[in-house]
Image (cartoon, rainbow, N blue to C red; front, side, top):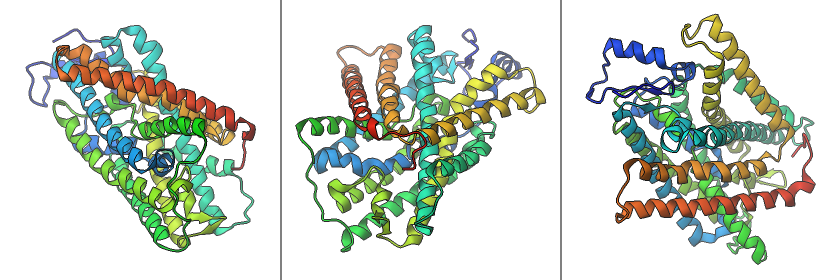
Length: 463
């Protein structure tokens, strides 16, 4: 058994059963910080893991995939979608194998920054991986809050086209829902919510697909045009913007935290969870992307549901749009809470006392205050910056691409040290180089888009 660190759990190398000796169990609990002890409880099964993974990956941003196709066309769009699915599944599996390896050696890493500390060195965990993951996850919370408000406003305008309520008011309403859900104590406690979330993502994806097919086969839809619009410069930047959209749609950023919820022994369980998740990914991503682009061509909007309205007039029955948006809103709340977990874990580590009971006043009061403030700040940002999607593109390029595509292959090569003559070594190096390059170019493209859109930015704009 290796020496325990505050950020890891010791696991007996010879222990092949889930039962841990009582002395070791008490020793582990004494060594864990409050964030690991209270938020990242290791009690789940591989099925629960599949629910968490599906909620974190199969989220409403998949409704932007037809828009990504408008910059790529049919061939490149489908190829990029297939590559994104294969590379992300491969990378997440490599990350899982590295986590299993360290658990077998006596150090079960519960957080992304813990892995970076041990594999790359403390400075990488503290000054790069930790801050980048925090920005990505908190950015996802803000984006979910904004998108939830936009979906609520869409429902409102269908029922009252001349209504006077503004976008920021709906963002605040959604923020109130998030305020309640944020108090759920641990990641493992979300397993039932994330099961419902899995059903919801299948539901709104089916609705988006059915709606696209309905409009595409009727005379209500636009004339189908699959040509790529714009001059050479716009096409080039559009290409990289589309690749970034697809890559970040497959993004996760919290694989170690999700694997931390699995009860020991962890071997093989993450692969089963990923298989569940990617079965849902295959059904939802491809059906929405292909049907949406087929129906609307290069007129597909940033959120395919927006195409279901033409100058405010619904192209499908109003009830259909209402139900689809309700499914989307409910799943957005689950996605937002999942991405709050790394923030919650930091708060628990900072303010909670691991020697006190989880639900003692000593821990409940700081938990309530810190989590509530976190949600309030995210809601204010979402209401104040309705153009946050542009900002989130930059965060995604700097965050999701390295966390989900680059670091997993680097961690694998540094941990298992495959021969430089082996195909896996060079495959990993190729993935790291290609996606690092894509990340830089995508960030440049995102900053360029911000500069182009800046003249339209208004605080608390009613867009």
